[in-house]
Image (tube, rainbow over all chains, first blue to last red; front, side):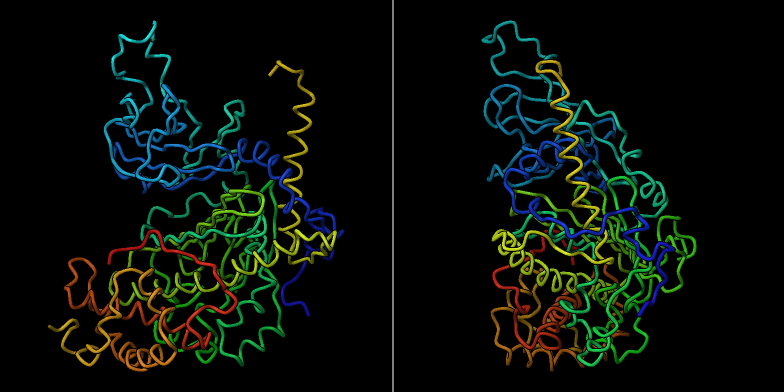
Length: 429
Length: 108
């Protein structure tokens, strides 16, 4: 039974010109394919590493481990206020420059310059080398040639991105395409109350994006969010999105309103009734200076009256969820091997005015964590069985169209990169 | 010494739930028995329902110590509510050894 109209072609998959055949998931179990993804994707695309609020003052910095790109970067706000990024490596003997206690853990703070722990080489916040211990012992050392290795860094709507490919000149805004432009103007800067979660997940990075890029699973795996009677009704109802769209490597799904607020209070659990909040956020939206109707055009693109949230998948690993009650969730998936990754989920709210609003937000983020735990463990169960290679291909339905787009896009990046390598004569790069 | 505002004095026996971080609150949940969770829930839930007006008057800037403890106690109630209302067990079903840890959260 159709609840939302499909495009004239009869399906979203056909409308978006994506093939319908069962899909091989070899790309999620092959160590070799993962190595190719590292070079073709994670060293060549714009990666979101944080937000400008993490760099409140000149001299604020944080580091980001990018295992998949085989590096670590320092992101810093310079004395001139500019946000820059550098490879987190000292030019002298290659020590990791900024870290505390554990070399593989991320760090952040404030400083006037970066000082290497090893031999105290010092760098200005713009990356230039300003001090070499016992400089006279070196041989014709020109300090101007030994600044930190820069990484391309651009900011979109307060989100800081890096790109490790110095040869790729595509500006960030162009890379983010129609969805990026159509989201611009959303008041992210007003959503400064942050809750961030982190998990080590035993699956390929794409499998967790798959899990959040379709809601076909929600009435089944997450039926616990409803009262038992309501859960049965919703399972029977199933899930359909309002709309799907793709633009270049990116994709989005626009979804109906769910339970913020529920049609009837009897649908939801007692704690949700008491706090008027839940997985979809506090039911009363705070003022962000825009009404739902005034949201930028890429958000609720169908301008549907039952709209509840949009989920944008910015390739490769940045997901942005904008919820009708004026809050935002971001997901990041940082691969650490072909069958492991680190997941980060960050919730952004308008700062609460009082203790009750603080509790409403707590319920929203704790709900996200509870259901995320179900998702995370299910993924490990999927990964181990996919690795058995018992079934060669998976049938994906029309509500799983973004999964096809993600896996197809990863394959295309790997293929294009391989071709560009074979097309370039050795030594001619 | 009283932990909570006078109007919430009946919650003093549950003062050990007034933990400042989500990680501690979740940790206490999964190491408690269902009987313990139910007892805390039964005591705290009606006080949350009746306490909405009070909580809406508590400003977070310069929050008093007793109000801060009350806020943390109700944050713990939010964490415990899932076990009591949805899962009927301390852990999320089928979550095995999986963990999702809070790494940044607001103070208070």
